[in-house]
Length: 312
Image (cartoon, rainbow, N blue to C red; front, side):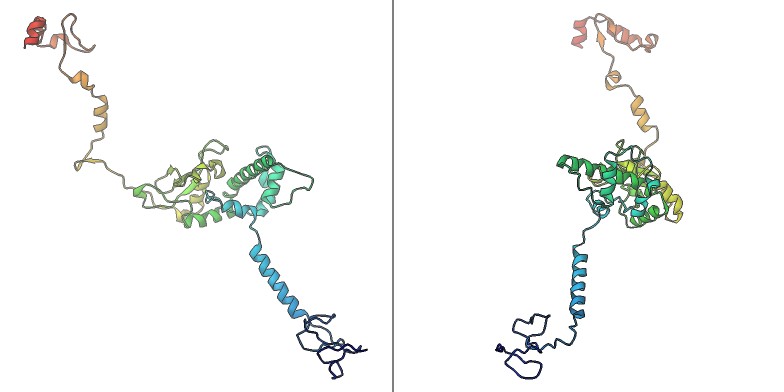
């Protein structure tokens, strides 16, 4: 007995399901593949799913691009306070020669390196929250030491040059430098010795970064060599030296260089006061005082009785 459905069979008759034909049912699925609602499908003809699969693939690709998480290096460089860092090429990090000697300086070296390169940790390794924090600190330290080596290479200098052009490292706080762009520099190549400073190539002086977050970054992650090598490599970006010097003035008059020295070598105010009289010991004179040079009137005044002196 034929099943009555709404549709059209292969032979053109309506209202019945025949073994040789297929009918598109209301829900758009006939048991063999997707169809348009109310449109008959011939089982002998191949079903073209390319358009649907291509659209699904494009949707999945676009969705994966939107949901793609940044790498650890991108995440680290985007943190607040890490604006001075550039993104180190993974090819440079994967070269063991570039990392020679760092394994003895960084704890959890292998795990920290895997974290930087986004390598999955072994499944049998279970870390506590405290160990995970230590691992993150080790990864930051390792990346900083790698960064110090990378920025003195050709690619590293080029990457930092772009940041220098964009003034990502800040400007010189000295007024006479007129907002000259600065470069990060360390005062020591040993981690933990000092924080990062900014070097002005116009006045050849160093300053603290303006951001308190950047002031906590280790200076060893930028080395003591980088800014000077940058100016040597790209001499066209080296600004002219600042020849203008601030001149202090008092009421419009320039101060003589010895003005501050005279004040420092001058005797205290108490010594410049009138010589006080001691009724028992006489005058309280300094070691260098010339007693013979004192006028006779002063000696007579000393000989006066105390009562007479007070009456004066």
